[in-house]
Length: 224
Image: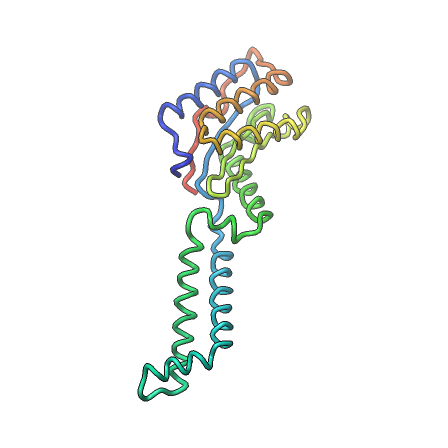
């Protein structure tokens, strides 16, 4: 996660920003980063198999030329040699393409954008529940979730917040985070987003006298 690596200083800045914001609002803010929301193995294998099949079709088209070339290489040439050669090439091409498809970032070219968005959304929702964000007393928790390899961000608000704050408000904050991350200012972007979320939450959910900190202020870096 080189691009999204956070120093201890970055983590402390995010934690402190969250704690400071929550001094003025009953809302709770959680942040998390995951390297990849899904493995997309099906799409990687599919791409490799399609590439292998296309290489087979190409060799069929040039079958006569391949046979002539092999005949010049071997004294005892038979059609079995051509079939074996084609089989080996298909296996090698398929294997190489599968390896290449596992290069970080390749999924963006192999997997439909809609599928990637769905997987990131599902992973964010899963963490939303796992982290207990749905368990806040007034259902006033929000999650800022970054999926590194997919280059996607989800900002999910609980039901208590959604009743009063329209989704469009969060979309503006998400766009701002994306811009900062692209400029390699991940920590600064998150701190700014936390402060913007705090302004909205304070307006609609001001701090109460009996308020307690219900969620961790630390950013959670997930393994999967």
